[in-house]
Length: 318
Image: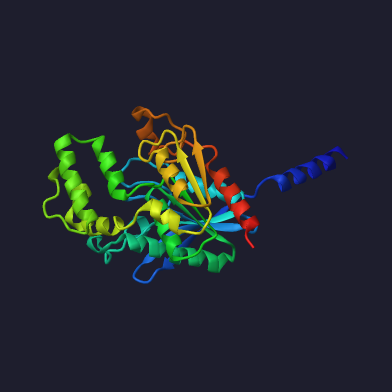
């Protein structure tokens, strides 16, 4: 009798535990190339789905940069946490990044609009295959990609995580001002202003060739056509904004600017969270290792804020 009671109790306990998520490899043809990603599925039927868009540079679907040692896995951890709350997600390597690298797509032909159009097509893939409300979640530059995609297509909602809340040329200038000498900064501002006006620059600062190289200038020009606060004001979707107080790349003021521009924005500020969504102090000695440390978990509150936003938004939708 005791053994039977124990078996029944164990079975009941299993039923109360969240079922483990499962992931599937996904390949989506977006017209001129194929994009590779991971579809994270909860064991139970999803209540919603999210397209997770990574940040700038060679940052892959999991939130890891190929130019840094190690992995932080922030976006993978986010997808897994959302699956526990029955939110499916698709995270992907953007064109020219990771598994989506395609030799026929060259940097000089890349435009910011490509990323926005790709997001629209991938979100359509999610909606077609899962038949649930689709949200956009963009991290860092991915947040502006999400806003741009939402200007082109209607979604259930948009979440911006540590995304720019000022014109990207101003954001770059502010970041450079903290790192380079005044004379080089003045030359950088000249270059940024020319690109912002839509003009290629033949003589960008040689010391900043990685940032202003000729092959990337067309992309920068296309990116500088967009201003995040104006974009936030243009979209009708509910908007969730999540920022951390120890983010040394994108300050909380960016979230405040987007919140002020949108009629239905929710701003969540997480004390002690840095740019890669980890709980780290603002000290440089702790910041940089966190970008490559998979043992640091996702910051408390990130997944919960998104889950609550998704649940409340889908509940109040007609």
